[in-house]
Length: 277
Ligand SMILES: C[S@@+](CC[C@H](N)C(=O)[O-])C[C@H]1O[C@@H](n2cnc3c(N)ncnc32)[C@H](O)[C@@H]1O
Image (tube, rainbow, N blue to C red):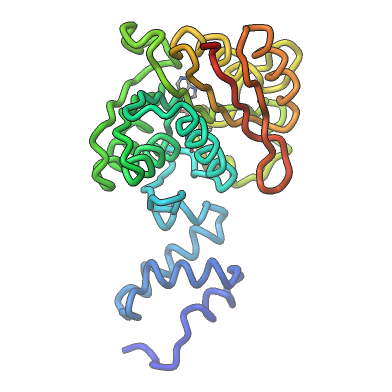
């Protein structure tokens, strides 16, 4: 029997957990206050105290309209990436296509592409999504998230960027979205240690043209042009120092409507450009 006056949140706070996180863990692992779950709750609290991200311990996390399953096979979807979806929806609305073809490069948990499908469905737009990732583990997570949210108009492709994409799609894609790795290997040591729990291949890119972590961004700008339909858009997340080189590269390559937007914290974050019509 457990003490009816026992306050599990207070117990976890006493162990050193932040009160908000303690509440999340209690809601997740002690639903209805089931005393048999106390051992599980304490195990989860210990994992958090050992440094593991809360999202992996809980096993799911909200991203816009979706509750996504997440585990160490995928990057934890970030709040700043939610804004990229708004920008992408704006691009699609401007193009007014009723059945757009979308490609999510490096889909991870499926956060960006599946959110788009879900939110377009609500707007009556019958989009089709190709979600690709070089990690087959990540694709398994994304596939499970698509099933969880009854999103069926999606195919999953194991591919290094565009390498394995069906060549019949060249010149036909309405929207390419990507949140590629953009942290330099040298920067990893200086960042939050919690990042070490996430897949390295989701975070770190090579340097390119003297810009730290720019390798994948650079490749995606160069290669997307051949896959977009005339007037189609590329919307891509990036790091703070990468705005100027991205804009320069896109203009050199002949993209039009080249823009770059800040995230909610005022940091350079979302690159947008269109293939000329
Ligand atoms: C920063 S994570 C983004 C995940 C997800 N799109 C999101 O926003 O939460 C980058 C993703 O790109 C994938 N990736 C890295 N290199 C890749 C490559 N060469 N080709 C395809 N995907 C790649 C990683 O496996 C990872 O899932």
